[in-house]
Length: 147
Image (cartoon, rainbow, N blue to C red; front, side, top):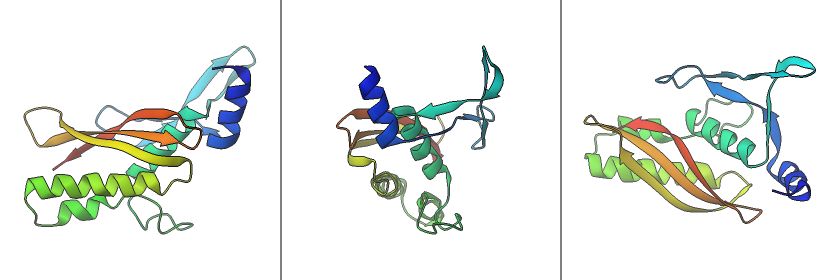
């Protein structure tokens, strides 16, 4: 990516504090630290990496729990409490992911959302492909859900 493209991506897709998963099976996130020539500090993400991180955070946040934006987040937890067959639950989860992704103004369109089995149990890996407002296609592994 050229320097001009990187500046444009940072301006349009934003920048923020870098987050890292607490553990392999945890939904929690913590600040990521960096070691630099000027000393240690909080790591920063920008551009596409920031958008990917923000979309992941949106999918980890239940709708209605952000006091500043009650419409922010993922409604998939409600879907998991419904008494529906697994195939319908999977499709409702997919639709909830699409709704969450399209709520972000930096996403022009959702190209694909895939739920694929992780193992022999009922866990599914959620992968999405989106096109940003800059026209870039971005493929994201957004996490796992049990159906």
